[in-house]
Structure formats: structure tokens, C-alpha cells
Image (cartoon, rainbow, N blue to C red):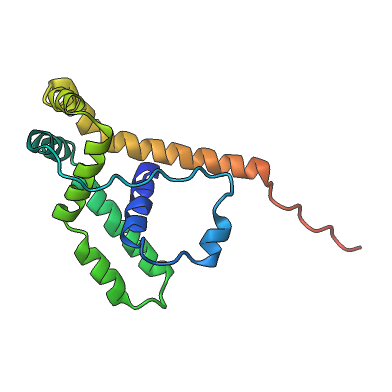
Length: 171
């Protein structure tokens, strides 16, 4: 899974599981210097033209499908990591993650951050040959970027915490 997909999955899973209390381990592992997350956009009525333009953008870019896949992967990984949790909990969470639910959530996020002019410009770009080329390559670029960043972090970890030296032989 690419770094971007992992981040999306973690965010999506967090949103789905947001009503549950974080475990002490997760709270302890959260850096104190981490910036506070921005508040989620409040659901409000969206201008019909803007909502349609955003829906077109989400469809063209495949964002909803990518997020659904990331949610499913995240839930599967979380399920494997938590064998004591009743599997029905994860099944119910996955059932709740539908295209309509995720799409509706994302429309509100896009509405919050992009103007109608922004969305129209993005739709125009993605309807061009260049925009389509970008979309065609983006998944591969994301995966390659994630792989390279993972290797970088592994190498950085080795430099920061080198393997312990072999114990001295007894004479």
C-alpha cells in the first residue's frame, strides 16, 4: 500500500471509528508536538451547481473508489491486528462505507476547501489529454513514491538506530 493510500485509509478508518475511545497505546504514541487536526467541515447545504461539479470531479479522478478501497484495506489490516474484536464489528463498518456515504463526505470536504471556480478548472484540466495522462499515471506514481519513501525511512532508521553489535566471544 502506498504512503498516500495508507494515510487515506488511516483517516477514513479514524472517521468511521471516531466514536470509539483511543487506546492508551495510541494516545501515548501520538507525538505531543503533532499539530491539532483541522475541524471537519460542517455539513451544510451545498449549491446544486457546485455539488454537481464536485461529484463530476470525484467521479473523474476516482477519488471515491480509491477511498473505499483504502477503507477496506485499512479495516482488513485492523481486523487482522485485533483478533479479539468481534469480526462482525468490522463487517458492519465495511457495510457502512458505501460509495454514497464516502462520496457525500468528500463532497462536503471539497466544498469547504475549493471554490466553484477551482472545481470547474480542475474538471476542465482533467477533461484534457494532459489531465487524463496525469490520472492514468497517478496511481503508479503514488505507489512508487510510497515505496521510495518507505525505503528512505528504513535507511534513515538504520542510520539512527544501527543494529546492535555482536556479543564478544568468550575466551
